[in-house]
Image (cartoon, one colour):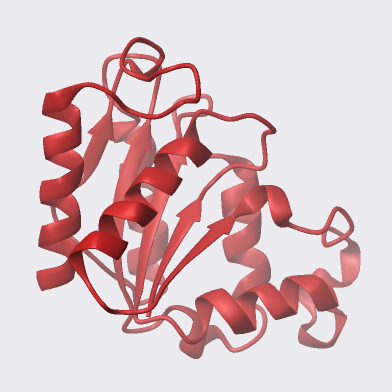
Length: 180
């Protein structure tokens, strides 16, 4: 199973439409089961002082972890650039999932990273931060990343990438990840 994560809970983000495009690319390239997890679907009440105790995990968050993260072999994470790094909600999601079933959640899984940015660097710095966190937890991150830059100028009104060179890069990354 491959799980694609849209790494922000911001409504109407530029990240989710691109995550849907990546999802469709995977569906065209493999018969493997593909899931799409949108962090907009996180429960609003999963942040509380008891979240750092495995018995205090929010039930809805636990179901997301059980359905999308634990059973997957591979994670494809799209991270928008927030303040030169990756979004706090993505970090909090990772932290909250690490409390219960730590090894089953992260250790030995493979991950690919894509950055989404309206700037020129495609969140490369944030992807480095995310890579470091994932490596610390035992996740094997594909060496090459997919920096998606200037997304406001290469997307249509629905937020889908239309630039041919970028679409080719997305397709090449999906193919590389399937072989990884």
